[in-house]
Image (tube, rainbow, N blue to C red; front, side, top):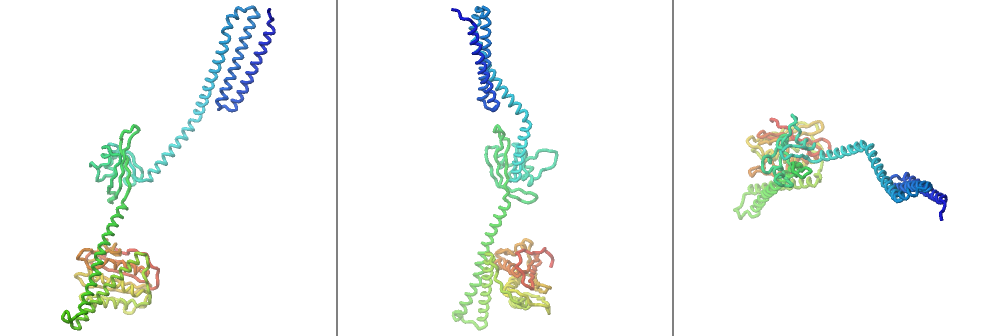
Amino acid sequence: MNLPWSPVIIADVVGSSLMLLLSGLCAETAWRLTRNRPDNVFRSYLFLFTLAILLFAISRSFGHLIKHILLLNDMAHAWSHISPFSGAVNTATFIIIFALGISFQRFQKSQGEIEYYKNNLEERVETRTRQLETSKNVLQNILDNTNPINITSVDFDLVKANEAYYTIWPRRSGDGTVLKCYESRPGEHCHTDQCPLELIMSGSEKVTQEVSKTIDDVVRHFIVTARPFRDIDGILVGMVENFQEITLRKKAETALKQMDRIKSEFISTAAHELNTPICSIMGYAELLSDPEKFGGFPEEQKQNFAREIHDNGEALGRIIEDLLDVSRIERNVPLPMNRESTDVTELIRKKVGSYAFQHPEIDFHLDLPDRPAEPKISIDRHRINQVLENLLSNAVKYSTEVREIFVVGHENADSWEVSIRDQGIGMTPEQIDKVFDKFYRADASDTATKGLGLGMSVVKQVIDAHGGKISITSSPDNGTSVTFVLPRHDQPPGRVNNLATKDKTE
């Protein structure tokens, strides 16, 4: 039985319409979702899939329309030839459209990224350039604030150096010719097998040397560390050197060695200086304790023995007192001061008179004001007597051919000034600079005059404790003049400073 085509066509049209409507709604919904989240790949693919279904539905509806037109016009034979390809065409259309959609979506995304990078390229380049400049400045600042650093090529050319390097070895103005390393920073290893670059090129990975270089006529000491400098392919193109200055350390080491030497000399001298009066005291004491054993002694000789014991005892006491004072100074303990109103002229006369009596072979010339306005000042009598003792003792020790010592005292408006001048061997400027140092002796040879090298250090501390000043004028073979000033009224202790004046003819 033959059914009419009208119901079939109506059903097919309604079904196709519903399919088109449904696929269209799905495509629209997917489009909205994609627009809300354009960066979501899953939503983009979902939209492409629903769009392909929509186009597939359109293609299928169009195919059915052609089929119905052919069948209504009794062209079933034509449809029989076309129908085998209808499903394949619809499927191929779906696949092609979906594939093209994916490709288009990716192309569009790539184009968007290209456009984004194109629009932001200049900004990104500028930002990156600023970052590189900042990094470069930071690196340069780090390099300029570190030890001297330089890069030397395998041809001994000075390729690059930081500002710290050029501070020590300045750039040379010229025609732009590259300096050789041995021209920029000559040293004792240049042109020898100990040259750091030669050692690097022979295979060393690190070379460390202690070197001395003369810069502006001053010898400076460095620890140099050299390492290989290679290009990106690992080929050796030179070396990098780092200079660490150790000049101050070397000076400290030298000073420490000198101090050790001075202390060793001091111990040896102290043992001798202490032993001499002790042996004298013990010898004379033995003579006095048993005079019959030695045939007896007249009374005058016994008195001489007693004076020798007394003098050696005083010498021993002075040595011990100086040692105690230096010990206090070392521990930053102030020297004990017992100030009292003292007649300076009387103190000087007694001390000079005592030395003149003990050393009749020396002419002492004392020059003091006849009628001083105010001869008394507030001082520690014992300590100032100690100062006079040390200064007169030195003047006697170092007087040679001309055996004259001049002692001059005069009063100022607010102080008393005392000078002691001899005609002895004198001192060099270098010796004057060190004369107030502890344990220092201008002549430490075996033939030198006796002494521990403590006296002038103690003198300086005593004068400073009185708020006064002390200065020395001396030159070789022209004698020495020591001048100290004592304020009339109590002054705060002055800072320890070496007030040595320039050489001048006395």
